[in-house]
Image (cartoon, rainbow, N blue to C red; front, side):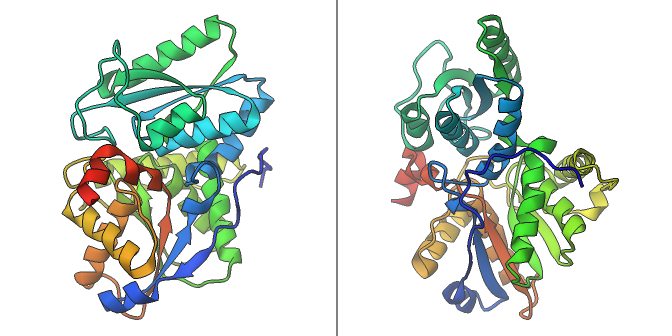
Length: 337
């Protein structure tokens, strides 16, 4: 296996905790949680693992400015801004909003020629961390990102483009090693459940399962994509990531477990299932879930337990991917209050 350059700033290994009160309440499988909300970088999250590899590559290429994109309340953008501040990069974030679906912040679309809405949660942290913010709308995200990169390049700012969600092979490789980390914790589980969206986390976990010998099932709860679309994307990304490591492994859509039954009102739109999941985890286990990613995955997990999908003999691990600052975004805070 090829060695990939990596910076070491995440707080690893993240802990695995039992969820005894929630397990008893739901009367289903034994539940555990892996706390990637505690990776340490400006409130942590799963993107911190990916950024260890992405920033090493940026340094190796002599970059001075990190550029990426996401929703107004993007956890990825917040962690990218934090990593940039930690290692002395400039950071430009292309942030979009939309009406409901796709925003991660269900407010009216932002006019790029006007100021951003009043900052809260991740958006406030982006500003505090010193990132430059460029406003766009969802349908214009890719073009705005390209334009922003070209402008920085022409200005001699030596930009490095980090893809949406950090989900390219270099980012995904981090979760292959996260699977190795988990297996080294010697906690047997039958299922690993987590939110899946841009695909990097799931691609890494399924690759890591094959590389390091995890025999259980890896179930991605889709946050925003149909099952067939997400499976195909993850399979392709896992195959590419294996190639980056010098491993001749291929993955097909039928190899993967994806559940896309819990898309609700769309990406970033918190409904009653997410609301219930957040409250249950908080009041039963004092664990805070975010409203967009792990909150939705937990809602799906709870519903599947109630439907009898998991055996009472199973042990199921929920992999918390972070994002808790979004709880303090105005719309979510008001809904949960």
